[in-house]
Length: 396
Image (tube, rainbow, N blue to C red; front, side):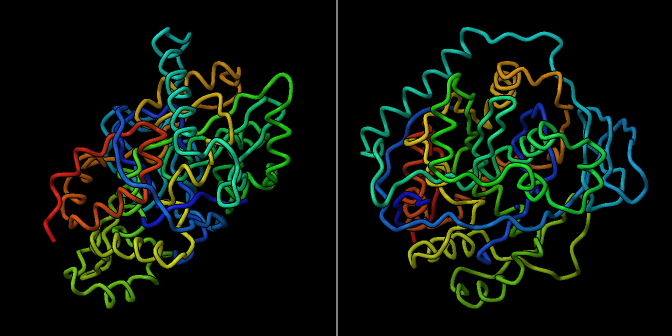
């Protein structure tokens, strides 16, 4: 499994989209570790994608009218209303009831949009010379999950509704809701007990079967995904990443002081605790990439992680349109009567979009250009626009 060539460059996604389903957000093993196009420059440093999943950081919120379904001491499961309010002890998982549409059929506009995404990706892959495997660019099957019983193939992009579909795939594998809520294993760990990681050859064999499976990946604007990962993993002081903080502070003092650590879903951080600033974090990511180190799976380019130019996905879903896209996947694969809808870890407070404007505009022009270089292929293949963030960076 090789990832694509690039040069430079966890608890919930804060896009205020109603996710048809969500689940506990996975925190991996790390090496402490709108649809319009944009133009940026080609990447050149090798990106590795072999981070393995680790433990899950569990945080819970609940919302206005709630009903709990679990035993004391377990993850809080609620039936909630639109306004999210923290009613339970801070730092636990919020699992809210949701419902699928009673009846649903895809609109002509949706079908046209999904097909347009596939055509655009195929054209851009050919333009970039990525439509054929090379020594540097080959199928990366590492994070694919294959459910043969229901004819589903999914590439799990972290920070892009991954919690939703880990929950779904675990239910499809036969886990009960109670088992998922009470297990000490992370959602990825549970999934891999029943969905072994496929080899590229095994993935290709399944993709070539008749009838063909419904295969999909879910993408997200790469800069928003980066901001979401920063807030979840760095600003909130995720324990797995905290061991990096001292080295980042000392190495990037010139980029300013660290920032006060953020509360995690109502749980106040320790007094006087700090986290690296966004500028410090970004420079660390860029330097890690420049040195050829493995990129953390929460901010690795999605085009490297799922190699969509070599895997002909049936559906290219997006976080930005996830409600409709998820309904299409669920109803087309006829799993609507099997999965149990949930909205988990829905964000409160400032949206990722609003936070992104603040944080990305703090970066220097050189940092922004390096990020655009890192995510150039993502922006191009998945038709995302970065122009909002191009003219607000500082001059240094």
